[in-house]
Figure: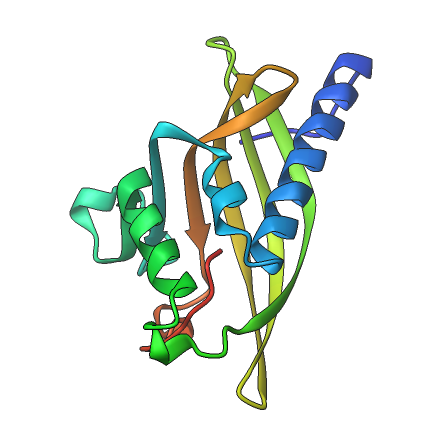
Length: 166
């Protein structure tokens, strides 16, 4: 589990990761899926388990366990006018906080944070929150997402036509 920063180097790491996570949220709120997908490594995995306490994607039911190709297909489906179930696309606003980071010996960073996502869609509003878990790897002066887990509070949070990418 990540711990709060203890020194200047830890603080710099926290600031760098925080800026990266804010940028990811900004891309998602702007429906800029091309830029969002550019934040992932080629071998990335994106996991939304059904159960809050899930530890192993292979042993659990999942809302999603996607590689980068599947994420691209989902984003493409959301971006096309033929995706009638999402027309017009939902407007969202995300807030992330309680960001914690831990540098690993292999150079990657484990990060986690809380999130709240407000959604406006066809005259209705809704919100949901949860926790996000990341494995980030260095990419120049920024980061790439190797793994992202979206931990929602309960399995019924996502409904049939939920169009929000987390």
